Image (cartoon, rainbow, N blue to C red):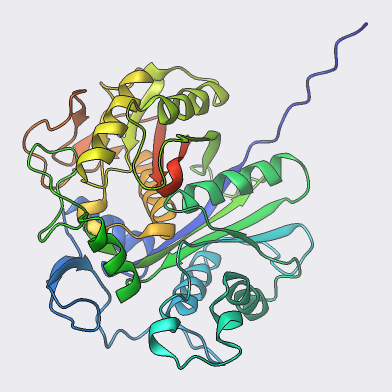
Length: 384
């Protein structure tokens, strides 16, 4: 019996991207801010969010979006539209054709409407993630029904992996992957109930870490099987896993995220020694950082330079995987490793090579990790 032929999968390129955050409305502005060590995290006294002060990265109340919208869109939908709109300015694809899919990632979407709007018969439909998806689809004229990805805090990375697999299957040639979340009272009180919030700028992997910061923003990545620029970065590997441990507590061993990392590296066709940098999930909570450090050690990557952007952006939930992946892309293109703000002393059982200053280095492959409630994990490899 003859063996089945090996079918080669097409390369998947990242041909355009955007970060829309309190640090700026374009990737270029955001990356300059990151290289300068800037942070959007501030202590806010907003009774609408919390009776206690909250350290978070929030848009100013009077933020004026640099795009005109016709119709009624929520803040969440404006973030999605604004980010996609800016990313599309940097590539030439036919979003109205059948070969392009829109993928939208979020954890909470329009959940804030439950706080702000009177309870009326159609409120449940308005809050639904697929409602926002259709509004964004119609705004731009995508012909395919959008795919909604909502899997806790790995949503952004999972959206990229989903787009990669759809393109490799031959079903589509382009995928516009976007994600957004806003900080609302619902989100703040949820994390407060876990006693997971820090009252100051967070310190991922540091001995003195005491919790995370929340943030709001949006990110977009345009994937294509056709390279458009010489320095377009490829998505070369990725895997997901689940701890099956606890609804909110991470794995006690890190083995499941460690598996996802190792498998992502294997799928990319490289070895652990080839990873030039890690953009970690790094929430700065005691248990998540300990688990992630163990996982990185299990995968043989404890010596790879690592940083977390949570002190810069806060935890942007469904947008985090996209925003942080875009930053990793720019690191590869500019051959720089970003600093992990607030880190002073090793705070995990497994030591890590946490980068504390902007560092120039020849880079080839980057790893992005993510974990979330429900035990979900994801790892993604980006390559020049």
